[in-house]
Length: 524
Image (cartoon, rainbow, N blue to C red; front, side, top):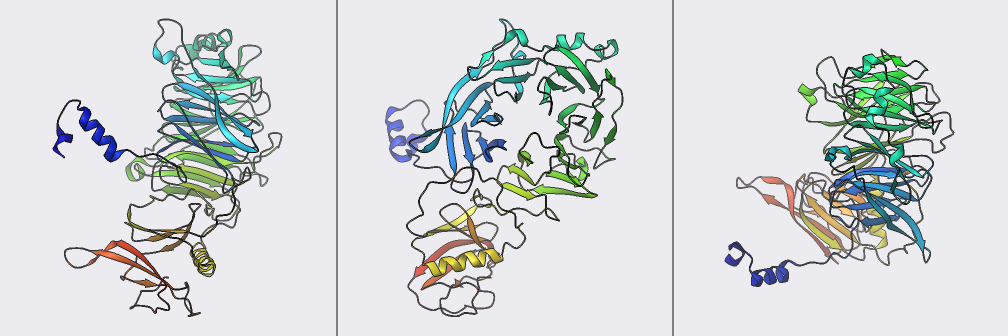
């Protein structure tokens, strides 16, 4: 093995490395590795997840899964579905845009890349002049608006990805249409937010990092109204009727601005620091959603007190006097809220919150009291805790299979009764010829049962003995098997005390009936 330690290029060593370590990927399934972006199509009811390796995955109803891979091995930064279309646009960290389409071939849908594009600036321009920060697909599905670090907004025509240079909204053009007192406050820098007017496609909202927000008329090339905050802008949300804008800021506050014909709104209608008065983290994204009850939903990421919750990954929901902060065990990549799909509807009426974290996908039921999570039918993270051992069991008897599912459902009483809301598409895959299980032991002391679709059917918490028996004849047993013995073995520390994670899992078929071995050895 010393040959691997010698510096320089050695052809013999390279050949040996290929022989020893080469592998071929056959299939990829389940929760994606290193997710980096999230997108959702209300019309298709399909979720898209991008990864740091350049992969893009689409998930609909259980069994509906598509995967595409960019030619460049760059991280996916943003994903945007074109409104009402089977197309989406991805932005990579190399500043390139890619157009993808779902196309039907031989009766089966496939995800294909149609075009790619890189925004170019004039000769001699700084790289920040065309560094894309925000992508806005227009409701016409024929235009993309691209906000950049320089403060300019470029217009790109679809599907050919042709830049319309004569329609660029430069920061200088906006500056000339603002009052004198605003021009001297250096209110620009990069574009942080782009939003289309919910009712008028000829108006877009442009938010700049220094706190300036303008509503730009596309036909008249003028500023209809603008707002100026004293805090750095992070993101904005436009109310469904277009009469209110909510902005969130770097100091953990959010502000409400009424949209009127006034040229300058000096003060917000309301300013709030939800977790103040002490210094708070920035609120990086916010939703302000109307309901039939009259009281809106306020959903935002961040904003927690720096001193006590600075290292937490939280998304807060405020509605009808109730305020809940959902604390996640891994970094939140992005989130979205599922609302009424009809753009002509008068109210939002949100019904689910979808959160993508580094290690899990979580859906929260917003229509049930207490806002419980929805049990996912797929995308359970296999590596939610480090795996210490595993075992595959094939051809499970139907009787045992049904009882494993029943036992697992008794452990999932804290989940919502809502049906899985991401249910677009129809799976054409045939039913598996046999029932298989993957058993995994984890560092947190649990043993998980996984079926072929990646659903976690059963959990055994904190095993305290070396054996758990599954019997087939005793009706008092909560879980039974036909001639199966399930036995997780635990590692012991030097002091002789059992540690928290199993070391080995064995499934011994054809063992007949077995009783419980010692106190606490049952499957419950």
